[in-house]
Length: 241
Image 1 (cartoon, rainbow, N blue to C red):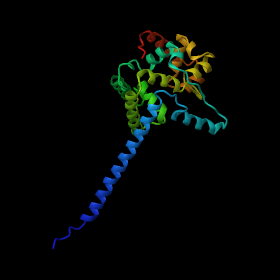
Image 2 (cartoon, rainbow, N blue to C red):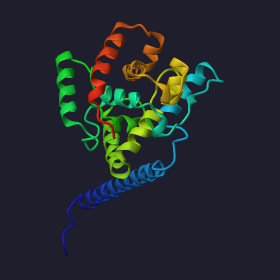
Image 3 (tube, rainbow, N blue to C red):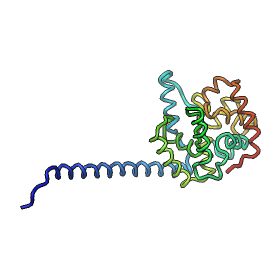
Image 4 (tube, helix red, strand yellow):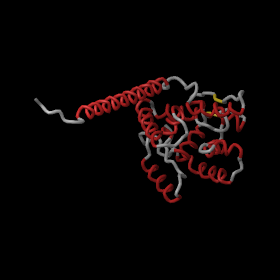
């Protein structure tokens, strides 16, 4: 007769439950990634009706004003000024056409700046990473959200062309309170279409992009004016997809 080892059965049950829990978590991750991939595939030929970031901003606005509406109008890549394309590349992601979603040199530089300042002053995010956040995530900062952003970035680069990623980006990023995309931004700030933006106007929009609602309220901010000049100087060297 074999002696029974005390505690073996409970331990076996706990181990089995742990395996099932891990399997369930893995299944959830796989299903989530599949949903993201299907959505990105849809965006190959269709514009987003609304992004996660737009929905969050809309919810915030309607707390104060139930009738608040977004300004968002999709325009194709050919109807966006080349000046704005150059300005955004120069300001946000100079290596956009060369990297595969992550600019490791830029990330290292951002980490160095943050370490020197003792706080987050630079993110090092590429245009593809910013698009991932805008389409599917929230602006909150956490290790989990950064992991989600990284996974979506890989899928965006795998499924879409660089030009399509840039086209989506230019059409969905925030450019003021309730203002999303190049067309709405051009009309809101200059009274013209996205195709008509001049170099200086494009540079102003690019300079506003990191903090658009603040700069909308403070169009003469010294930091904004300084950034506009830097971006204008860099625009001729910007490589477009």
